[in-house]
Length: 275
Image (tube, rainbow, N blue to C red; front, side, top):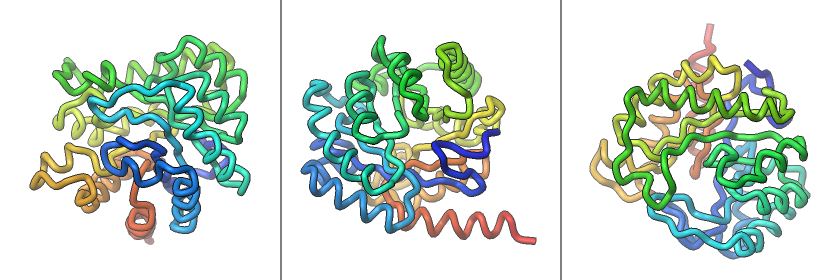
């Protein structure tokens, strides 16, 4: 297993704070849609304990409509530049090569792609050529339709094998495996049962030798297991799922609620390393 990712030491779990520069993300759409608001949110998340800021200009929630690449670039570029200029580790959440290029030029050091660099034929060359770090995520289908009827014979094995193949493709393009993290894609073409199995069996993903990122924050499966709460009332479930993921082998948590997650992770880690 790699000892660091994107220059950050993996001797403790890392927290990636979410900044959606969008009007329509499932949980916080519109809250940081104006660039100045997004920059302010980023600074707050760093103060709260975020190790990485993940900036996205296109919602990939189930049923989300696509936006033009020009619009996506216009949304993210000033935010990435302003936050990267402060020395923060910035990730760009996009599936479009031109947006990756714009963000990297503005200072992003991680590309986080829900299509695992398969959504745009230029993406693999762009990331490999830039030498930045990468998060490869699994998604079955497209955001517009991915939750209509997801099917797997063996969800853990199929997602793991897909990510293994994508890691190998990146290595063949010249990337170092130590630059790559993997994400099983909770909620991206998965039922509640699929999500639970993936979280429970994350140890099988650690065998690929890459850090495992887990994004469970405020996702709908939490509400389906509880009392159908709206996204902002899913903090307790998000923390429970995140800590279960850490116990199973996750090393990076992608979250909306950074301060609360940092506290929970600090206590969890102190207990697990005591004695």
